[in-house]
Length: 407
Picture 1 (cartoon, rainbow, N blue to C red):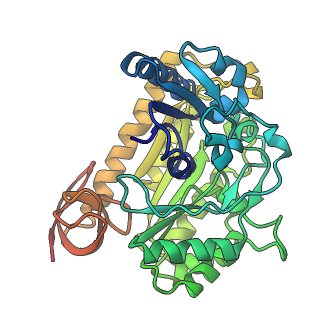
Picture 2 (picture 1 turned 90 degrees about the vertical axis):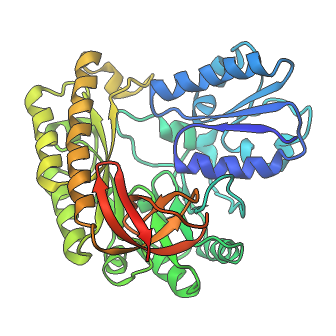
Picture 3 (picture 1 turned 120 degrees about the vertical axis):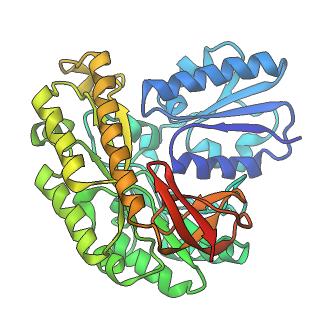
C-alpha cells in the first residue's frame, strides 16, 4: 500500500499532491499532509488531520509539507506525531521520498526555476491540471502565499504543450492551467510571452484537446491576447474566475490590490460582451480590517449589480507577519455575518444563471457517473461514463446546479 496523501488548499496543491503520489508509491505506513496557509481555518484542518492520522495509524510516519510547513517548519515539526517536514521545493523531488530521508526546507525566496512535472493520473478526478507558473511577486497585505511559494517563475511553453499532449493521449478531455498567479506568466522566459500568447499557441499546437480551462485570474493583468482567445476560441471554456477580493476602492487600496471597483466591473462587462453567456466566478474576502458597513455594502452591491454566479467567499483571516494583521480588525462575528450575506447573494445569482440554461444543450464532462460540469462549470446532475464528454439537455435548475438528460 502506497502513502496516503491528504491535500488542503488550491488546485496547485492538488497537482503537486499527484506529483508526490508518484514519488511515494513505494512507501508504506506513511501519511503526507500537504498544507495550505491561506487561512487559519486551513491550518486548523491540517493540524486536525495530523492528530487523526496519529490516532488511526499508530506507528505511521507523518510527513508535513505545503505552504504552511514552508513558512513555519519548526512549528509543524514540533507537533506530536510529525516525523518530517518537507519544503515546497523539496516535496516535488524524487530523492526527498527515499525512506529515511531527513527533513528538508530550503529558502523558497531563492527559487528561480519551475520544473515541468508530468502527471498523467489524477486520483478520482476527470479533469487534469497542468502547472504553468509558480510563485508570486506581488505583496497583497493579507497574503502569506509569496513566502510559501517564492518568486514568480514560469514553465516553458514547449514543456506545457508536451504535457497537455500526453494528458490528451492518456484520455483526459479537459485540462486546467494552474499556478499561484497565472496572469504573471512569462516575463522570465525568452521573449517574455504573456499568458494569452501561451494559451493561443497551446490550443494551436494541441488541436486534439477538447476543453481548456483557466484557474484564477488577476483582473488587473488580463492581456490583449488572452481577451482575443476568450472571444474567438470555443475550446477555451466560457468560464472565468477572477481574484477580486473586494469591490470597494478604499478596501482594495488597503489590500494593495491593483484594480479598482470600476475596473473590475469593466472586466466582467468586457468578458460578457466578447463571450455572451460566459460564467463568471470571483474570490471575495469579507470583513477585511477597517472595512466599514458602507465599504462592505459597496462589495455586496457589486455582487448584486454584476450578477456574478460563482463566488468563493472567505471571512478575513489574520495571517502572521502580514501588514493587514496589524490593521484595526473587524469583529469575527461580523466577518462571518458579512460572508453569509455575500454567499446568499451569490446563491441567488447562481440560481438565476442556472435558470438561463434550462432548455439548452450542454457538453458535460462526467466526473462521477452521476454528476459533472458543463462548459460554464455549472454543476450538473446527469448519468454518464466518468471521464467522458456527453451531450445533455438541461431540464431543471436551482442554486446548486442543473439537472440534465443525455441528448
